[in-house]
Amino acid sequence: MTFTDQQDKWIKAQIEAGEFTNDSEYLRYLVRQDQSKNAKFLALKAAIQKGLDSGVSENNISDIMKEVEERMKKDGRL
Image (cartoon, rainbow, N blue to C red; front, side, top):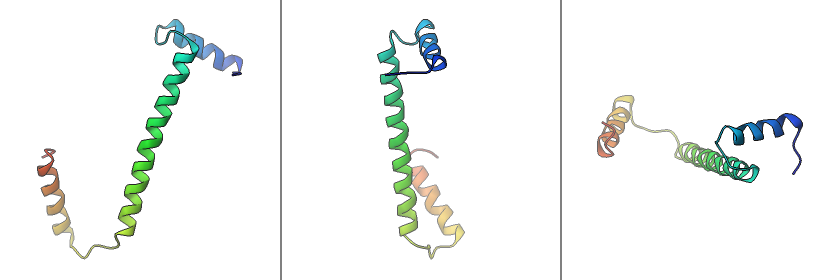
């Protein structure tokens, strides 16, 4: 794999700082980080699509807030 001088210096600085033991370890870390970020993005995208697909609620704001409060109590956030 080829890196620019600036990228190579950055990788080496991470290794010298004791964050990683070699280039491969740092690259594996970056891939895992990217995979996690992508998984979170895809989950958010799916949730947004689910919301869009569900249509417009017939509930008023007070009803919606009560539902949210009940869900938050149920899962321990309130």
